[in-house]
Length: 414
Image (cartoon, rainbow, N blue to C red; front, side, top):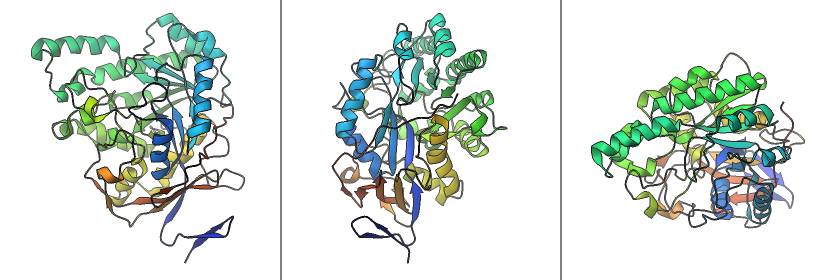
């Protein structure tokens, strides 16, 4: 029976299990600083390693927003003290901080986050000259949230006129609709082509957007790439009736056809990576009306297990899951010495038992917010062990509470 032996003569029986590279999640919101009643670097990185995620890239819409070098440095200092997983942080674009963006050391910072539509924290950049300056001068990856604000505002007015403030939650998908997503994504792609920029479009949610991306060239040749999140592969707009605002995200969950075609695009190479957009909120905040309930939900503890459900259903192979969640994020961002099981690489590993059934319940949810849209769901696979930089960070429900995460380093992918 296969075993793994590590320093200290520890022997781990891996019979019948899969040893995978640790997942690299390029899109999370860990809420620190300023929003720590929802989550923090320690709590959410614990949930990450329990789910087989060994590295994450965190977004700038915290309080204060990460739009200066000082704020960026403060986040790195927090993570060095608290993170169980490896980390990097985006610097956020604003309408007036181009100088700060250009000061960034992109060998240590994953990229620039650009909101081309408002979402949680409202960091929208709507100045066209600033958009042009960002795409023409930033020498690194630009990760973009794409939703057209004009379309959204028009739709809000229409639904408010019909329902007042009591708009049904299912209307969220019609407010942040296909047109809003496509217009914004098309503009981002246009700017990237014009300025030969490195563009990564986050959380695709519509089939129409897929025409903007290529599948006929390998990832190494792409300068414009795309991400899909687990919730857009799992839920559809038919699920609003059951889950309500628990599945309210920006961009919104769309139709079953969008979900199917996004999954097909993941398999054929149009979509390059799977991420989570992990974005916890207190449950009391989510139990609100359509306009007042915040968008986002916790996902990082369950992302790998959820993708393995598709493996059990014969829709995707384990090799393809590893490609989209481990290999491709490392290649796309130029992450040094991670994302693969290779000699000389960091020992970021996860051991998965694909014959271990378990049910998501409050007692095994590790997010600080204490809830999951998957609550009650039975999964057929479980992460049993996770190593971060060779340290056993998670072992069947037991954590190494000594933060062993390291700052990610990046190679130039111009």
